[in-house]
Image (tube, rainbow over all chains, first blue to last red; front, side, top):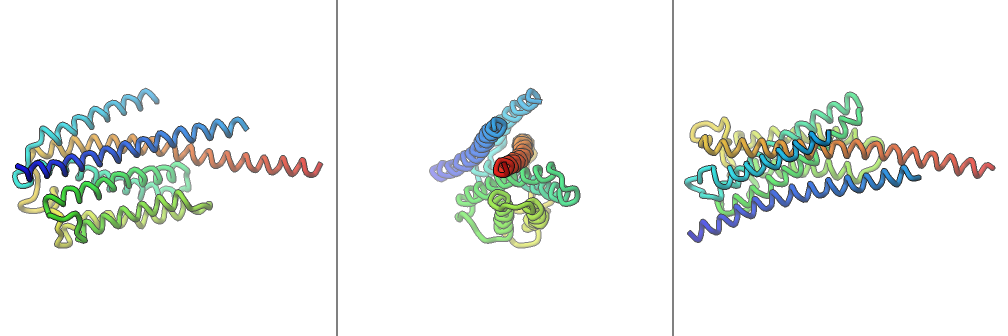
Length: 46
Length: 236
């Protein structure tokens, strides 16, 4: 029983890692979009 | 277009949620490994999607070398970047699954090593794209993408060609391999969900890469205009 519970910790860790990687990537895409919009605005102002 | 994208994003989120339920609660518990085997439902679809994205990178790189279109270059970059994120998931979830089952985090067998090499090839592709400067970078990156893809069939066939610690394939693995039909449901639902997520990421990154190219051209044009203005003022 204790072994199964320990193994479940690996399962949760794997699922958390997957979602953290996807969320970090989605966040990086959003921040890149914001930066590009800002750069485009600055360029058009010149 | 934005509405269509939002609908697609909502469908993807719902499918990801359903895929999670399939993997965690609906799929039967594997007899030998227990619940930890459920890592498989994220590990396998992520690997297949990484392979698919590297194939898209290969096609886009070939397309770019033939036609030299901005779209081909942008698609190659987008598919490589998203492919690396999925391949990273494969390389992290694999050892997390291996530790309780094999008793080790990692072994240098053919499947694991060739997957690590694949990841390193595409990380170097992204490093090249990000840090190198000059007009020939997309051409060099396309060449790297084409030759880098040669590792994908090696990764796929490694468990057939070599004796490895990694389990035999679930499709065409011969006698004793394969999956319970109820487990297939969880695999296919998660495959569909991650495929939609990957498509969404690639689409966003593709649009960004095109916008980056336009921005670079605009910057170059602006600095040319500035130079010619200062030259004119200097002459006066």
